Length: 372
Figure: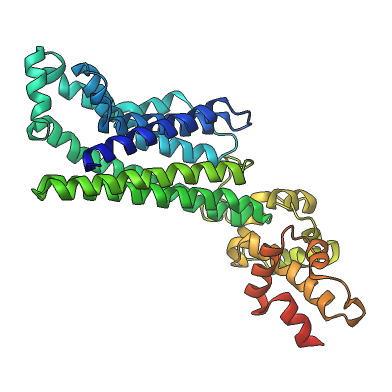
C-alpha cells in the first residue's frame, strides 16, 4: 500500500475515533460536565484538523469552509487550557471574560478578509495553492507559535501550582490522581505538538516528499496511541477529575503574615499528638483548622512556611510515627501491614509504602524486621 493511502486510512481512523470519544464525553453522566465538554470540543477540533489527510477524496471543499477549518486549530490551545482549569478546580465555570480566548482566531479571520474571504473564487484558489507563500499566513504562523508557547507556559504554571495546593491542603493521595492525569496528558500533547513541528519543518526545509510522508505517518500513529490511551484512562479511572476549590491559595500567595511563633507551633504539635486528627484518611487543612478553631490561612502559613513542610508531608509524618510504634510493638507482631496502614490514616498500600520509605529509608516490613 502506498504511503499516501496509508496516511489517508490512518487519518480517517483517527478522525472517527476522536469523534467517537468526543461523543462519549458529551453524553456520559458525570458531575464534571463542563470539563468533559471542553475536552470533547478539543478532540472535535483536532479531528477536523486531521481530516485534511482524507476528506478531499470524498468531497470538493468549499474554499471559505476550508479556510475556516484550517483556522479552527487556533481553538486547540485555549480549549486545552480551559479544560485543565476545569479539572483542577471543582467549581470552575466559564465566564464572559473567557470569550477573549477566541481573540487570536478572530484576528486571523480579520487579517484574511481582504485577500481571501472578500475576493472571488479564482483568487481564493490561488491563495490556497500558494498557502505558505502568503504574508498573512507567514505572519499568523509566526504569531501562532508565540500564542501556543504562552498557553503552554500558562497551563504548566497552573498544573504545578495545583500540585503545590494539593500538598499544602490535602493528605488523601487519591487527590494526586488528578495531578498525575494532567501531567501525563500534557506530556503526550507536548510530544504530539513537537512531532507536528518536526513534520512541518521537514516539509518546508527538506525537499524530500518521502521523508515528509514518513513523518506524517509517525504523527498519525502517535494520534492512534493517544486516543487509545484516552480510552484506557476512561475505562480504568472513570471517577477521575475531583478538583479543588478555585479560591484556594498557596502559602506564598497569602498576603497575611503570621509571626514565627514557638507557642503556635507547640500548640499545633501538642494537638497532633493528643487528638491524633491524622487518623482521618480524608483530613484536609480546612478540617484541621476548623477543629483547632484557627484561621485556615494562618495554619497554612504556619505549616508550609514556619515548619517548612507541605501539609501532605506534615500529616504523613505523624502517621508514619504512629505506624513505627505499632511495628515496633512485639505484642502486635501479628497485626498485618495492611491493617496498620488503615489504622494510622492511609487509604492505600502504595501511598503508605512510599511515605514510609521516604521517612525511614525502609519498607514497613524491613523496619519491623530491624526492630525485632
